[in-house]
Length: 210
Image 1 (cartoon, rainbow, N blue to C red):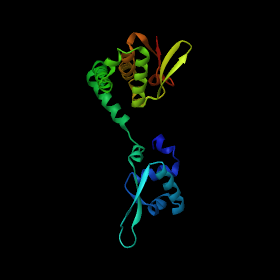
Image 2: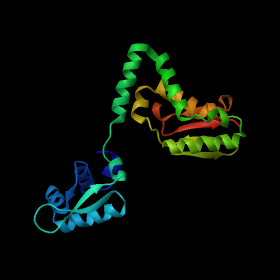
Image 3: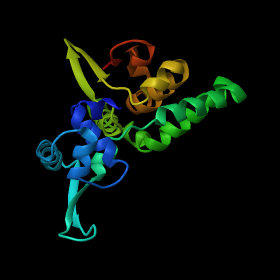
Image 4: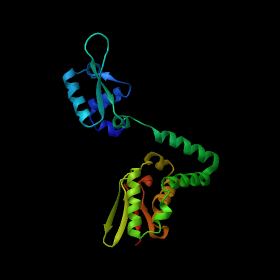
């Protein structure tokens, strides 16, 4: 299971995984977990408060309507996904057929499509350029911050959204993403990459030469 899912605890993770296969009643979930319905209800109440699941009443034959649970869009996002596996295969195939040059060009074009206002931002004062870059990186999920060390300024990315793929294609993916996401919007002559998650460091850190 993905780390986001397992962090909720084993029982809640199992409930979410089970609801990923379709709606279920509390009794069905209790049977799957081998616990009583009271224990399941406590988990379901907590997950509903978190916005991960929702419930509704449906007719399931004779008797009163039964309460069934289903995942919300937020809950669906917690289910395991393997985009990185597909991306790894795709990049390997491109590399095998055309080498680093085409792969580098395609990555650059894709990144620029995500950051279309980079050219416009390059005309702003450098402080505003840095802010726009950090805001964009956070929108993409990089968990970026601006850090100061005396008179030196750094843009730090604490997360790599391409983590598994970057380890396989760091020389191409990291360089192109760093150039298009950070260096070009701020100014190539003013930015230096001094650490990189894809190359084994704990963060991607750019020194901004203001």
